[in-house]
Image (cartoon, rainbow, N blue to C red; front, side, top):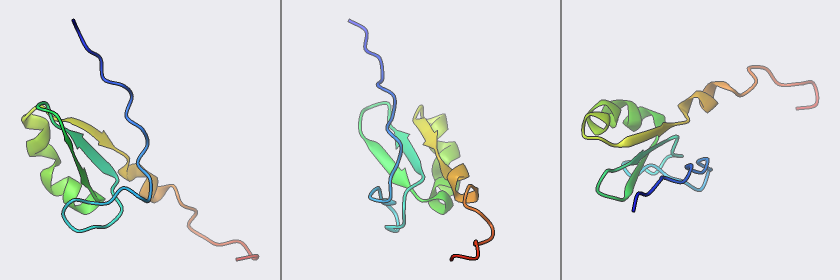
Length: 75
């Protein structure tokens, strides 16, 4: 029997970094099962090693730059 990974759901504000508790933007699914969640800062520190160990990386840190840079007059 072969298994396929279900598409990872998008990380939300409820997902927190396992290192510092900030909002998680990176999910590392480990080849032995389980996952680690990281904020963008800690994800950048650990992502290369995790990838080398065979982890599947879901990186949503680009969402940090998706916010508008200026507020409207209503804000």
